[in-house]
Length: 61
Ligand SMILES: [Zn+2]
Image (cartoon, rainbow, N blue to C red; front, side):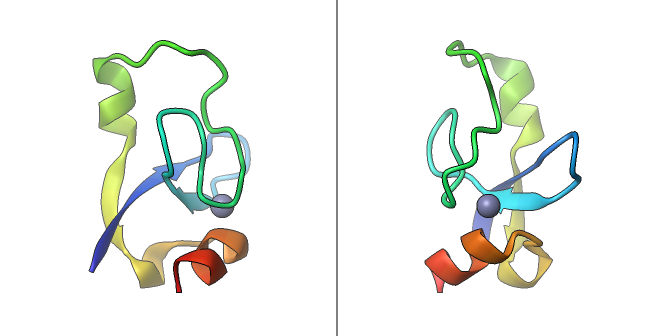
């Protein structure tokens, strides 16, 4: 199974996307409200094993 994930720029941790601004663990990966094409490019579908955020990982299990 593949999950929509996003890599945070500062920490390089891969989170699972929950909505247009937040990750499943509650981290805000985006600090502005508009959602454009660039943001879609940031979201990548990856397998669970590639998710490096332990909180996101435990929530989706
Ligand atoms: Zn996370």
